[in-house]
Image 1: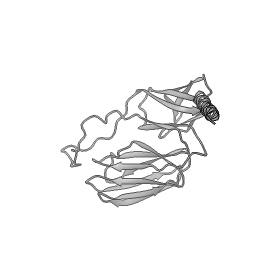
Image 2: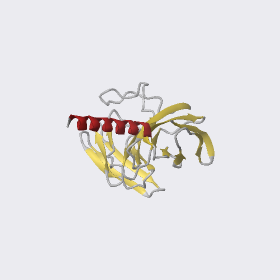
Image 3: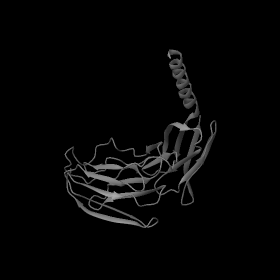
Image 4: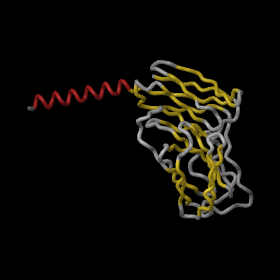
Length: 233
């Protein structure tokens, strides 16, 4: 009996080792020669991935996330932990999505169904505070990473910690040209597709096998805004 148990432990250890060998790492770098959008999501598409519910809060006259991920058939949960009333809206002519949820008092939340097409982003803003902006991606993936290009988050804003307005008006989030890196861990050997979603850009699809490195131009409206380098090891 002890011999059988030892064999079972050894066999389980071998399976774990095989599993770790079959899992790759994907690393990449965005290099923008022009101002980038606010954020991106890099992901391994998987139609069998569990559904994910996006959750975004509002505090100090801003969204707590630049971008979050949800899945068709779920609702995005928007909370208002601010001392101010907000009025969420979206209008996207490409996906024919338009809504205005009305006033959201402090301490309340609103849920918005994810009805825009898969592998696209929806921009959500506030009708009261024009500087507020966030994006919700509709993807099916169990392995993704968010890349934030906003560079002025650490600067002093125009609202105090309690959300009271200072003398000057609020400034929009800013981005900067330059390089931004990311990595995806535990990418299964059979998963060779890497997708990239950026606001106002077409979906980028990269086929990548172990040991490959590819450079993809970042195109918007027919103009090159930079390049994306992706490596798999």
